[in-house]
Image 1 (cartoon, rainbow, N blue to C red):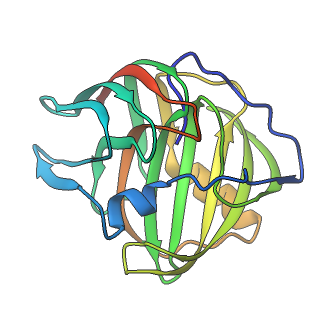
Image 2: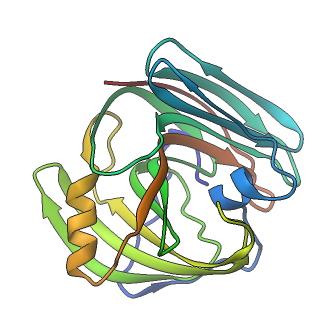
Amino acid sequence: MLPSFLLAAVALAPGVVSAPSASFPQLGDLLHGEKSKAIQTRQGGYYWSNWHEGGGQFQCQNGAGGSYSVNWQSSGGSSGFVCGKGWSPGGNRAVTYSGTYEPDGPSYLAVYGWTTNPLIEYYIMDAHGDLLPNEPWTSKGNFTIDEGTYEVFTSTRVNKPSIIGTTTFQQYWSVRSEQRVGGTITTGKHFDEWSKLGLRLGGHNYMILATEGYTSGSTTSKGTSSISLG
């Protein structure tokens, strides 16, 4: 989870990105952990997901059509949120969106989804604040498409919450080199590039364009986000 739209970007060096000493939550924990406070529903052709934990103020508003907005301020301890709209199932889709994203502290804006057989948790990240991976990231290289240049990372989560329960699974990450808020993310192009790297996906479960913010150690997160799909 990454900060607001100060976009306090962290430079990603090739190779391995080490995990910090503290443990930070991830979407799988948030949406599928035992303490999850998730609201997941369908509305007007879109799949809406909203979760939060701990103290702080998290106002995620499910708007009309493909829109949603967030105003947040996390507090100390385990405090954070993630919400977004998308589709269930996900898959190869041109995700066109617009809006604003203004974080300050750990936060991110990304297409986020799952597949099964194999079980994969994936992120296609357009904008972010502090990047604080829970496990070390291994760089798999870069690719450039008409939508931008992305660096690909993988990581492995051991005995963590997932859409099928607590288990071990891989994560795939595409992180955009030049951050942006708005445009089109064609998920199939990322899936194709991942496949060239030997990163296989399974059958698609849900997929959302998510905003997330959370407390990392002593660093809290605040900000606003207003996103419209389509």
